[in-house]
Image (cartoon, rainbow, N blue to C red; front, side, top):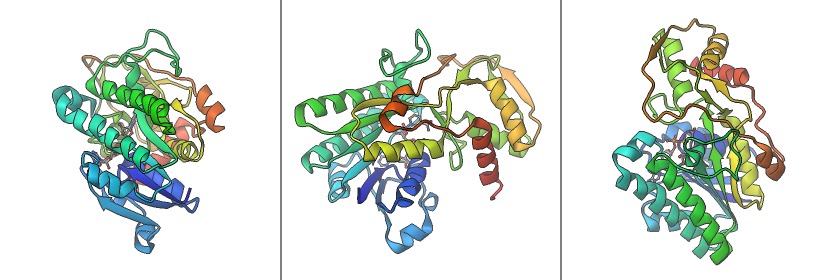
Length: 311
Ligand SMILES: NC(=O)c1ccc[n+]([C@@H]2O[C@H](COP(=O)([O-])OP(=O)(O)OC[C@H]3O[C@@H](n4cnc5c(N)ncnc54)[C@H](O)[C@@H]3O)[C@@H](O)[C@H]2O)c1
């Protein structure tokens, strides 16, 4: 790989993925409409010396996508409307980013004969699963337009492989956390919201009794999985999680330790449609990419606390 396009590269996962690729000597091009992404999330030195370029543009615009894809030997497609709630409120608009945008990217990959596509799918494709832990053979049953859009991406990718031989892998991220996640983002933002609350002394709002579980995976580990997926030829989908799920109450305990601050918690009514338990096994990820996310929750939370304090 010499030059990789990252759509959504000025976002949370995208900026960490850009750093992981730059560290390996890869030239990075970012296409981002800067709706939630920010130029200052990208490494200033690489922008200044040309190892990284930022194209301001939208994946809904096929011409902008073609121009960005041209000359790249791999594409990491992360740009999306990422809010489950927004997808419920405005499904047509959400689909234009997450289905039409995806189609513009994968079709440019096909026409311009780019050897490799890695794209962001999501654990949201599974909905409220009948049994846990989830693996890639678990039946998708999305509960939101967002989850359905990501599942449609997976199906398009499978069809593009059969019809045109496109080499693609969908990364079904579980709950990603770490530095630079926007606490205002409504997607998997519980850690960044709690971090904000702990730093400012605000009360942490827990919906329900706090026994709901999630697999929280550190963003640096997600960036490394993306980098390995780009360099591999693995096809289909991969669940990207740690294999360890914790409850929200356990999370708060780990956060008070990592942040060195006591937490004030208020329980509120359970949120409608909240998935109670989520867990995955990273077995296929490990077998396919020879990699398993290894950052412990406390290590990742300490890194987050340090970044918020400017260390
Ligand atoms: N964060 C998680 O826990 C998580 C979990 C599962 C899946 N994902 C997926 O991973 C990807 C990255 O998510 P993130 O958490 O980094 O979110 P993010 O909001 O930080 O990043 C998304 C980036 O895409 C850009 N963008 C949005 N719409 C665009 C458009 N139409 N054209 C061009 N750029 C556009 C935004 O400006 C932003 O920089 C998304 O596809 C998301 O659905 C994230």
